[in-house]
Length: 354
Image (tube, one colour):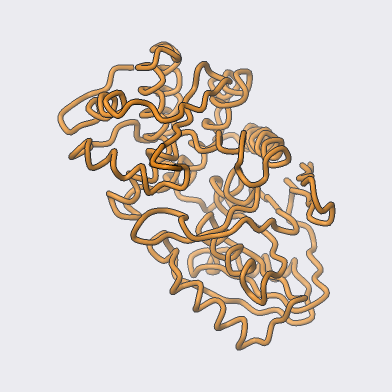
């Protein structure tokens, strides 16, 4: 099955997302696969059998969010120059969201921009990170604060890679699927409640629907000036959690799961979301062993961190919250006291009611 990304201008940037067994990939010029030791050890040979290029190189970088840095980007670029790649060359991101974000960013700045292809190997990257052209790295101020919009030439999603995915990584991907359903599709959310994603056919259907929903959003708003910001449901809170707890303590999808609970609590406090709907979201997250609480040490310090987020503007922060399952609201610059009241619910030794 295929899902199309159709961007307004220029048409040459349109591309397809293929959800099927990995096809043969033919590249006219030189190419470099960017991956990490874990993915390479498990699956590199299968990818090499599928890729044909004039010259093909493999660049292995360390595994983990802690290595999503400018230093790693510089090491990738050095290798590209060593191998004499040029403007007609192509990079292939072979791994999860970290690999995809860094490969895309390296492609966006190498000789002012070259093509890259996404071959995502985690559920989270298949349903979210590989689609839409967001690339970037982290620094001490926060997550993905340095980066570029750089669309891939193609995305190849093959559930075969998920056969070796650790349980936590699988669940982290499910969090992003649930996020899409809560924001955009009440029927899809109800379907998730009644279908087990450990079943391969159910999983393929969930991936297809998630990618379709994201594609619709990206087609309408490539650079997050409007509806694409809704994909940040749970993320404003999640990025603070990741930064405070140290990248790697929580997987991104795990932090998003907690962030969704915090966003739901804010929506309840604003009188826009019911306790019953919040409970449905919590039950679905916990079915896949996702965390739904986080012990905040200091709500004031947590709150101040929001203003380093990319979504802040003129010292104002926008939260994406549900107003029903399948419906959303951009909650612009709520009163500080209201946000602190919500954060207090997650303070150490406190429990949130759902």
